[in-house]
Amino acid sequence: MPDLSSRKIVSNATPLPAEAPAAVQAGGRFFTSGIISDRAGGLESESHRVFQLIAELLRSSGVARGDVVRTRIWHTSKNGIEAEKALRIVHGVIFDHPGPTLTIVQVERLPGGVEVSVELEGIVGSAENAVRFESDFDSSSSLAVRVGDEFWTSGLKGDPNADRDTQVAQAVGDARGLMERAGVGEGDVVSTRHFMRQDVQFKSDPTEWLAFKALSIPTSAGIAVAGVGDPKHAFMLELEGVIGASSDRTNLRSGRTSEVDHNYCRAVRVGGGDLVYVAGTTAIVPADMVQHPFEVGPQVKDTLEIIRWALSKIGLRWDDLIHTRTYVVGGDEKVAEAITALEDVLPVNQVASTIIGVPVLGRPEVVVEIEARAIKIS
Image: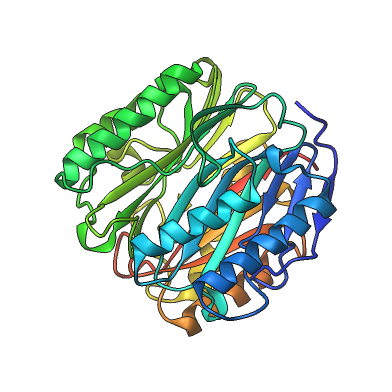
């Protein structure tokens, strides 16, 4: 594993919140904020501009395009299928085949009214040694990537013509197949997130998904979104794994009932490793009471305090935080309020950040959810 003793900040692209750097590199790990276009103009124009900015960002960071292991694209187009086709084509122009994992999600809104936001994750120097599975030539993407002991998947979906639970089972089955090929055990899963079409939210996790998580108790985030591809697609999942994690990991729970009910934990650290994964976190205290119901700014601050607590319990400091992804319910003014709150609390120009507007979260009074990554560098 590369030396993680320093943090390199890159700021020559357009992130929001504005106080966030465009990208952060800690040793060999590279995270970007949600990069948006500096020129409004619709999905096609913005997507080309965003990827142009990303190409420049990678070049100035000294990160090869082949070092990128994950691309995640958020868009607000109402035509999910056509938008996804267009975005996959643009992705294929920027990256060489075979490329990184790719997840495309249709969301409610993005900061500043833009239509496209893109975030990347990379491992510097991994281009020659990465193993890529099920690569697609047109989009220069892969369904899964393994670098050393680490493993990432694209957003995996089932047959859109199947019912919801069958789609879940098919996506989980695809994940299991990719993991088996990569040598990743089911107890090695460290982090998951799933995106659900907003009209098919789960009152309880489908049996197949619950059973899959039970084998590792990873971090998790379940986010309702406008769409995940075909209008009939109901569910999409992606995950990260670390080979050997099943025998040497810390799964931190925080006393919330939902963690037990849904087979996940608040944070995961593998052995004495430097990287910590933090689950989608909300302003719910262990008694299952929501702090500051319906209030975006205060919930951002309360949620970040819970993340701070989790990092301290698992052996890291607040200064080790390197990336956050914040989901916000409400209109443009609520997204702006979340940005202000993040800028007030996060270390200035130190943490890559992405902001996403969503239609609803797990409970009506919950209007903010935040995922995080931290790297022991302080």
